[in-house]
Image (tube, rainbow over all chains, first blue to last red; front, side):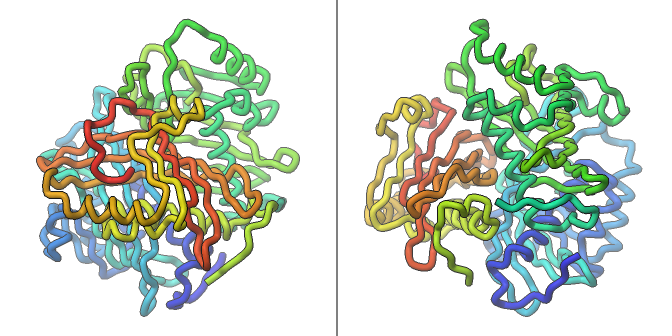
Length: 167
Length: 167
Length: 167
């Protein structure tokens, strides 16, 4: 287990970049493969999880179709999603690019990561649900990296009526 | 050339992760760019290559639309595919996420990797062929990493009638 | 900041691979997130940027729908694109696989990278614009890696009438 302190000059450090990628992978596989209970554990206790349209993000607005500010809220959401019987089961598949680390400063890593999210409906057809970008603030939390902020900024603004799973 | 022994605590080792990624890249580019003869060389002599629906995989069933258990069988398939004149040429393009390494144990690496596979038909249109996940068991074989098992678990169960190329 | 000389045996070096990936990320984010002025800075002063169909690439032809041979030409293109008012705004999103480094020789890295490029139209629908492969020659240029050649070889030959942004 490698631990290291976030330093401002760590931008090009491969180990740190690798740890960032691993956090992103844990995040998407918790959604795609489950259990969804692992999803909140990718965040710090106080955090921001925000799904928002690119227009809003670029204007600096905090409006979003989903917004949570604590890990407890994320846990409630994960539980509710797993027990909701109102929607037909569907399969989510994240295709994730690598993370571009913009800056490491004051113990925070700011990174952008492109993502395409596919959804397979109960009748077996797969469609692109959304093309988006994660804009994250990542910090050390104990021995792990976690998301202090994760903004899912989506290009596709004809979203399906209800986003069931986190993106 | 770096070689190293697979140890149980190697999960976070960047060199090992890099070698896993390289194996995945060799695999997809053998299919996408050819020659397809390179495809079997990504596997151990005795192996499992299985294409199966997610439902079957999750129920632990070994049913699949394509199933090979030796490298010799993979070679036969590669040869047959390249000489078959019954289908129009098409172009395959794999978009591959990074590999989430779940465990390294007893000299085996178990990894999950999301993949989207696109197919361009002879008239030039590109469509998503399948969204899937590779569930692999990877081992040292001489100086290289190779697949002892590669399960292509697909979400999209409306597959085209005939899967011509390996996925 | 790590610098190193390109040596012929550097194929498996993780730091070098990481630097290649970072160059690719800078390239796609200059297009997706802007400013597009950063896009030419990914190339050497004399360079080749060529968008061409796979058939032409495989026949060794230099024909292409876009072809530039100096950074100054790329800068002109970037400026023109940003000031052109004749087209409706659209959002581009690159999903990029990892780079397969084929060879490092004479100070040149030759790499292949699969890419899927999505476009979101002004009415908010996202479509796959093109599935393609970057075939690059990358060199040291001062402290950075840069593209001496970038060939965008596309599978999808029903391209939209006008390619507005670089691919």
